[in-house]
Length: 83
Image (cartoon, rainbow, N blue to C red):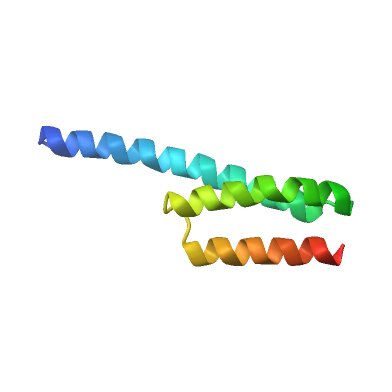
């Protein structure tokens, strides 16, 4: 364990951030899977803005890269258009 107060605090902060980032990323991944498994075009189109919003939030907080977010949104919209 660290000896300095600042390093102890930094460890606690990074643990909190890691858990928070993990939660948001996992929630978004589950929403993406749910959207990909949808077979009804109408419900998928209604659900797409919610998933896009989640992806944008992850990119804004630097949990995922901006380019990855763009690629995910593009692939999802292509998938819905093919339904």
